[in-house]
Amino acid sequence: MTPFATRLPVAVLGATGAVGQAFIRSLDGHPWFDLVEVAASERSAGKAYRDASRWLEGHLPASVAWLPVRNCTPEEVTAPIVFSALDSGVAGAVEAAFARAGRLVLSNAKNYRMEPDVPLVIPEVNGDHLALLAHQRAVRGWTGGIVTNANCAVTVIAAALAPLHRAFTVTKVFATTMQAVSGAGYPGVPSLDILGNVIPYIGDEEPKIETELAKLLGTFDGHTVTQADIVTSAHANRVPVEHGHTVCLSVAFAQKPTPAQALEVLRAWTGHEAVRGLPSAPDPALIIREELDRPQPRRDVNAGRGMATTVGRVREDTLFDLRLVAMSHNVVRGAAGGSILNAELLVVTGQLAGLRTS
Image (tube, rainbow, N blue to C red; front, side, top):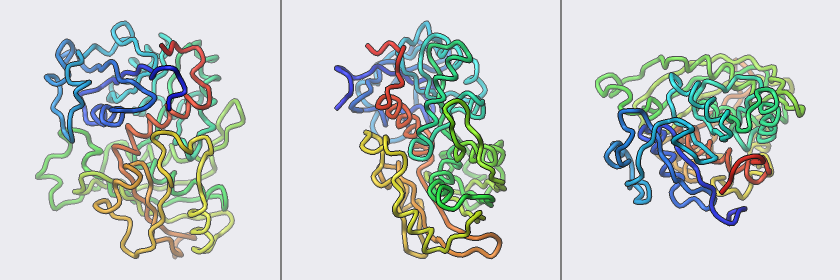
């Protein structure tokens, strides 16, 4: 049931790309949001969406197929809520233009994540940080605003560590990622580079992991986010898996837990209470596997409709205190679905004030 009389009109920027298509799939039939506009580059503008895009997965919704592709400007795209799947090379200026024009931008790009007045949010982990939006509007003079979701690999790490950080205080993290090829977009990594191979480099990925985690696990005092005092070392690897980022973690704590204590906390965790029951929210948000060989992308990537994080192999660590493995869907949880869940949380927490909603 929508909190409004009618569904809220929304738009997708960068709609022809892989993440843009994931937004369209996730918004198809959404009970609160009505996708009424799609936008992309100038070369696609003016075409029907079905003619401008190469649809990659599943069925192209009929309601979107004949929508005209618009230019990514606030003059052409008029919906009050805008989901941005734009590449970071163009996202900065475009997203700011929409925010100045009074639109709420839910961004998947990296450009604004570490800005001190911009919420970087995984709803179950730090949904309270969305209140930073009011400060952003005051500081920048925007009637709209920008909310960002985290890097797809950091999303896995933060979801797994958030309950442990609250209980035992994380101090150090050593993370090795095994990231799916869909994280590179389309057409992504050339097949002769990735088949039967592991590529131990993903541009800009390790710095994102090492900086974003501390902001996500930080504390919000009503005005600013104080970053958590966590030192992170990351190794980012591309592997021949279609969907699902897997991360192996070694973690040090201020109060060292036993594996049994850590598992008890992980199993009991429900996350930010306002998230429960939202249309895109998984229940549970964390799935704990006891098998020695789980999680696995092939078996676990679609848990919670792709929105849950699966954790396993929680055990003592010889370098730090504990080690564990976590995995989630990088395109759903780590991109489009994460942004949509952010928007749902903004709705139920009453933070759409000032936006035109009909």
